Image (cartoon, rainbow, N blue to C red; front, side, top):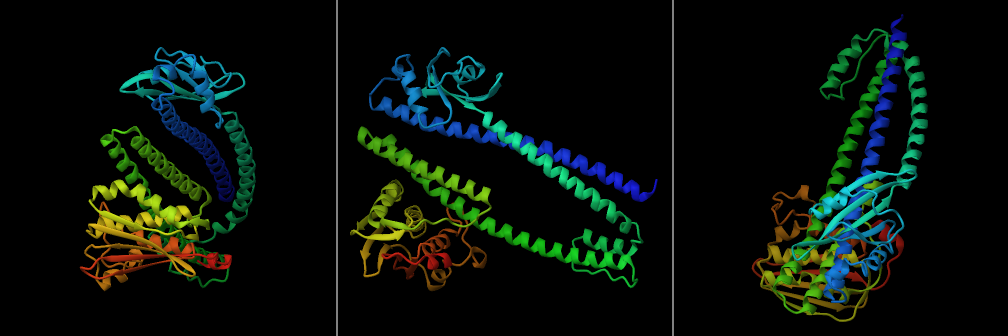
Amino acid sequence: MKLRNKLFIQHSITIVMLLAVMYVVVNYTLSKSMIERDTQTLGQYYSLHRIEALKIVNDKKISIEQLFSGTYAPLIASHLAANSNFQVQLFDPEGMIIGDSGNKEDLIKRSDIDAALAGQTASVITEGENSKLLIYASPFVYEGKIVGGFRYLLDLNKHEETLSAMRSWFIGVALGCLLIALLASYSFSFFIMRPLHALQQALKLVTIGDFSRKIVVHSQDEVRELADDFNQMSAALQEHIELLHYEQSKQKKFYDNVTHELKTPLTSIIGFSDLIDKMERIDDIRTCNVYIRKESTRLLQMVEDLLQSSLKGDEAWLVQVERTDLAAILTDSLRILEPTLHKSSIMTTLQVEPCEVYADPKRTQQVLFNVIENAIKHSGCTELAIRLEQQEYHCLVRITDNGKGMNEQETAALFLPSEQKLNRPISTHSHGLGLLLCKQLMELQGGDITVYSREGSGTEVVLMFQVESLPPQVLLQN
């Protein structure tokens, strides 16, 4: 058998094996990721349902014993499942299903309930004749005691339909790729069998990452053509590697900024949680719970935005400008940061007047959090004055502290990219990303941020917002 035919058969077998492995890996990975995503989603729903159930109990509408009784449990299960695509069940400490929002059998599997009553979160997958279900059970702990639990049943038939469509699509594409690959292999195997000494020497350089070297062949035959093709491939590889480094750098900057912003809601949640332990009035505790839920929701939304950005391959900040009350945003932001300000013994004064601007409320609050937290962490101030004033075409937010201030060199470097800073301050409290991110977000909204500071005389940060809506092309350019 000729070497050309041997190579063709070998390539055919290799391609078929690779496609088979890719099929198994893709199918397994997709199925596993869908189950993990659904399990995480059910876990998040459980956290929200637990808060809602505790609110009902804390409001003294019913007792914890009544919550897991045959009288109220069906109503609670139906209420919790009202806006979801899964079935909700409640079970008592004996493992009996006492509330069910659907009509599926409650004894599909009991190992998950046993695990939940033992204090563990359990998730199992069960298959029936015509259905496949993901079951998620979690214990409900109240005052250190397991008083029952929540159980969720999610129908996985849609997942199976998606996987089936993916398999059909993959097989069709794989067959097309296999056909193209076999034709290409059979056609080009003839040229590969020509003298390859010069190409071999060049390939040794490629193995050490030297793509700049060119193959010089003086013969006027197919080897010369192959050498030219190899030279083009080498140049293309070098260009793609540089592009890959650029894309990785861009993605790293984006995710650095996002992870930097995740700290703010977590800090607020921890602060209000600490305050709850020191409070006695139920109204104060409820107020703290409101802000904890609000910041938890904001944190969840940030994670979901990050996931969507990852799925779409888009690392840009999304800004939705609308007519909004800047005074309300400023007041709400200070209320959220109140535990942190109190812990740092910083006296805060706030002067606001009604001022409606065109801005993104979420991004504006994000900027305010960054600026105020910078003053808390780095200025060493004891007083923080915040004033909102309206001018003819703009609204200005002036945030002034009486801290140590900065010199001109430090002030000029505040908005530089991190790689351009000679002494980038990185610590467990600071990553040097906040103010650059603030400037980007303000410009995307059509506004601006300016910092005035003198060493030993404090710092003033001025945020400028547009009173009138900017033309779309201006925001697009930003």
